[in-house]
Length: 560
Image (tube, rainbow, N blue to C red):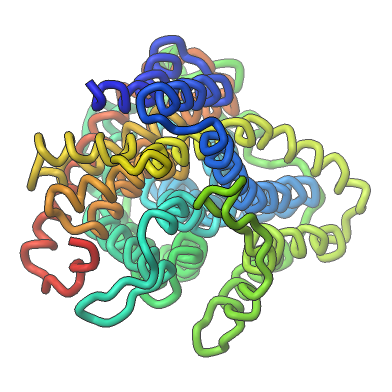
C-alpha cells in the first residue's frame, strides 16, 4: 500500500502531462500538492516540515534558474547584435553537401548551443537555420532533435549534473570514505559526469551517422546515401564525445558540452575544407515538387530563415562572447589555480529551515549564472557595437521564456524534498526509500538496464534532463544502494537517459516545430525518432553493465 501511495505524485505527473497534455507549470504544483497530502496523512510529516521542505526546494530552484536566466539572456542579446547570424552563416557556408551541413549545424553547432544555454536552444536555432538552407522543415526538426542528445547531460554549463543531483548532498554525509580515500560531494558529481560522458562516447558517437542515415531514408527511401558518409559521421561523433569525455574527466561537469563542441568544430571544419573523409559526390534532397505535403508548413524550405536578423559581424567577433565565457569558466574552475575556494566562500542560505534538519544554500560567486553569464551579457552590446537599448527587451524576453520553468522547477524540487524528507520527523523510511526498496526487490541486478529508461521517462514527461534528475536522482541513488548496484554508474545512466528523453519530450518537439511552422506534426516526428532513442537507452544500460563487470571495482565502489 505504501509503495502505491509513494508512487502517486509521479503518477499524477504522468497522467496530467501525457494524457491531458498539461504543461509542467500546471502539472507540477498538483504533484507537489499530492505529495504534501500523502506525506501528512500517511507518513506523519508535520505541516512545518512540509513547508520547510518546500522552501528548501525553492532555494535549490533559484540556484538553477539564475544559470538558466543568464544563459538565455546571452543568447537573446547575441540574436539582437547579429552574433547568432554571423555564427550560423559561417557554419552554413562550409559545404553544399546536405549530409555535412547536417553534421555541422545539427550535431556540432547544436552541441555548442546546448552547452552554452541548454533548455531548447539548439532546436530554436538549428531547425530554422537548416530549413532556411533548403532542408525540408520536418527533416530539419527530426535532425536537430536527434542530434541534441549526447550534449544534454552537460547542457547549460552542467546544470543537469550539479543542479539536477543537488538534492543528493542532503541524502548522505559528506565526505564519505572509499577505497581511494575521502570523497567529497563535488568529486562525487564529477565521477557521475565522467561515467556519463564515457557512455555517450561509447553510444553517442554513432548519433551523427544515425541521423544522416535517417535523413536519407526519409527523403529518398534508402539508407545507402547516408552510409556513404559513415567515416566522416563517425569522425564528427568521436571528435565531440571524445573531447566531452576528456573535459569531464579533468575539469568536471560544467564545461564538457561547451568546450567539447568548440574543440570538435575547430578540428572538423578545417578537415572538411581540406576534403578529409568527404565523399566525392555531393548529396541533396529530391526535387521540391516531389516532396510530401507533411514536410512543409507555413515556413517553406529555403525562404529566408538562413539569415537571422542583425547587423553583419565578423565570425571572430561573433564568437568572442562565448570564447570569453568559456575562458572565464575554465580559469575559475582549474584546481591548481585555487580560485574555486574563494568563489565558494560566500554562501547565502538557510540552515535548519523552520527548526527542521533541512537546509539549502546558494553560492552566488560560484554560480556561473551571475559570473560570468551576467557579466558577459552586459559586455555584448559593447563588444558588438550594438545599442544598450536592446538590453531591456532582451531581459523581458528572457523572463517570459523562463517564467514557466520558474513554476515547474520550484514545485518539482519542493515535491522531491517532501518525498525525500517525509520520514525524517517520524523516524521512518521516506517515500523515496519505500519506492527504492520495492524497485530493488523486483529488479535486483538488472537495474542498470532499467535506470536509463527511468531517466528517459522523466525527461519525456517534463521536457528537461535537469528536472528528470531532480525527480528521480534520489530514487536512483536509493535503489542502487538497496539492490547492490553501484551508485555512480546508476546515476550516470539516469542523466544519460534524461538526455535521451529530452529528444522526444512533447515540449521540446512542439518548440522545435513552432520555429519551422509545422505545429501539429508532433506524432510524425516522435514516430521517426523514438526507435533511435530506445536503442540509445538500451545500449547505454548494456554498456554500463559491461563496464561494471570489466573495470576495477574501485572505480565505482563508493556507496555499494
